[in-house]
Length: 370
Image: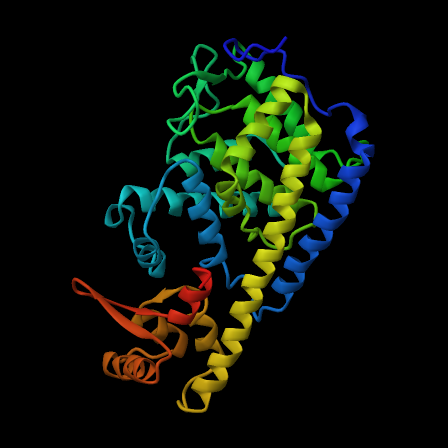
């Protein structure tokens, strides 16, 4: 019997029982989720530069993922921080947490792209980036217990006790990595494998903190590794925030009742809804980019597509960034350019101390869902 007050050292290894692979409800949901995910790839292919949304959708995902852990930052602070790669000490703690998530996402993306597989070290490196630490897998004596939050019934009560002991966590983590990398003998649909692996990672709880954020990064990286997603820009954490109680209830349902089906259906629904929303978001950005270019190029003779792409790559932009794009070094010329962009309504200006930021209000509106 599962006992949430004791370390779950009887956590079953992967893969789980094969019966769930043939469940008709899951198969039906797999089909619709896969179709929705293909919409995201089509939207990515419509971009003039597939990497241009690194500072837009990925930062929204980073912000939502940290909010799952009750870490909040304002859009203003976040957009300012990414506009010119501010140093850590220039941003508040909450914003740094979000920035580190995004950096961890791309650290993992580069590692998976280079190596073509998951490794224990890659997962540890992602965690270290998320938490800005040199720690690794939690030691066997660390008494980690997950308790119910203040919003739950009976707050403070033990909800789950992850496995612990000499070599136990490492053994589970290596089994998970083997499962993620096995595309030859295990024929489970990759989307289903992502759902299964996400539960397993959270159940193993290999680190003392930051497991939720690390696990959500691994979801996106696995979709990229298997070719189901071209770039790790799926805005999945927003759905989890909006359905946080169901997320944790279904997660616990596997440990307590072996209820894989409810969990997999929940996660596939998350992928489907998120895919539709993400593809619509990208489409809205692309259409607004085109409208802005048509409008601006008809009024400003020096306006070009490179500049248009730059101002849609991040919500806030600095004058020096425009200077680099336009290959201009004269402060007078750059100031003149920024003045024209503001006077024509393409950007608006905002002063923060001695710094002046230029806002793409149309992009901010789209990202905010308004």
